Structure formats: C-alpha cells, structure tokens
Length: 235
Image (cartoon, rainbow, N blue to C red; front, top):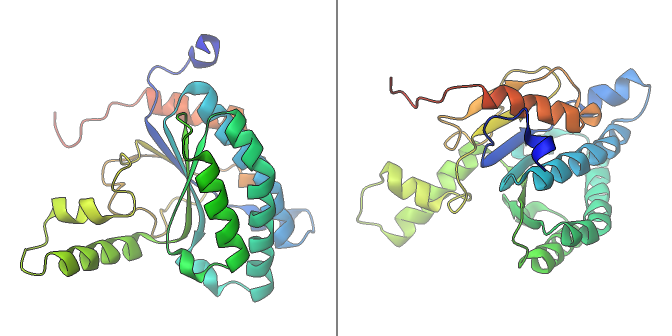
C-alpha cells in the first residue's frame, strides 16, 4: 500500500470521472460504438480496483447522461445489455474488495431488467465498508438542482430556498463534493455534470480515450492533484 502511494502526496476523498471516448476508440478501430462501450468496462474495473487499493473513499462515474437519450435506439438498448451483464459479472468482485455500489439519477427511464440488476447489487453490497462506487445513470447537473429545489419546496412550501437547503436535497447529499474530476478523451468541459457539487473541484483533463484509461493514467491524475494547492477563494 505505501509503495503504491509514495508519489501521491495527498489523496482525494472523492474522485469523479467523466468516462469519455468510447465511440472514438471504436471508430479508430473500425468497430461499432458498442464495442467501445464494452472495452470501457475494463477501465471501470481498473479504476475501481485502484481506488480500493489506495483507500479512496468515493469514486463516482458518469455513465449515462439525460442527453444521451438522443443516441440511436440500438446503441442505448445495447448499453442496457452491457450494464446488466457487467453488474452481474462484477458483483462478486465488489464483495471481495469490500466495495459498496450506489447509483444516482432518474432510474425510472431504465429498463426493468437493468433496474432489477442494479437494486440487487446495491442490496448485496450495502454492508460493505470500503470504497463507495457511485454510478451516475440518467443523470444531469441541471436535473439534480431542479429536483432538489422541487423536493425542498414540496416539504417546506413556506420556507425560502437557500444554498444549504438545495445541498440537502441533491441526489449526492450524503456524499462529499468531488475533490478531483477527471475527464478522458481530450475534451475540456463538464457537460452538465455535477454542476453544483464541482464549484471548487480540481479538474484534470487527459487525451487518453476511456477504453485505454488504466491504473497508470489514474495514478498520474492523482499525482497531479496531490501537488495542487486548494484555497477555496482564500489566500
């Protein structure tokens, strides 16, 4: 463990990753986009393993945004099938590594089979005390803020909305805001993701396409983060 951490001066509590580049990875190889998504599963496994090895408490992954519904129907249905299989295949590994799965987003739009697989895995891993693996599914930052405001007003119709009240009703209310956001594939934007929670997050952009993102790439991002000074607007 110490050898793994020797070049990381300080470890983030919460790392979030925008997993981008599956389609371009597949196109470069003359493959279907779904092949890129399938290849990206290995990167999810590698990143989760490193987070658990290093003792990172929260790892969140942006898996499917509300905007992704604009993709071809065949790709979306193929994604559901990949997710169902991946969750089933990886559940024993999550149990072995003491990892707890959580899923945030509007799951009502997901297929029934996918929802069933998700909730079964969440239940099986609910007592694990190691890294929390958070999958953001059918999620967007704007949706999260709006649903938080609506939930607060439904329960407290006569009270004004404040920063504290919004924060209490976000889907991530019991999770610390991300210390580090990583985006793969060379794109340098956050694409309507965790708009509220990333107000003071450190960003790290890498040209590596998600299916090629492995432990050394993750470690490099952590090393860069560990050398930054976070002042939160102060001196």
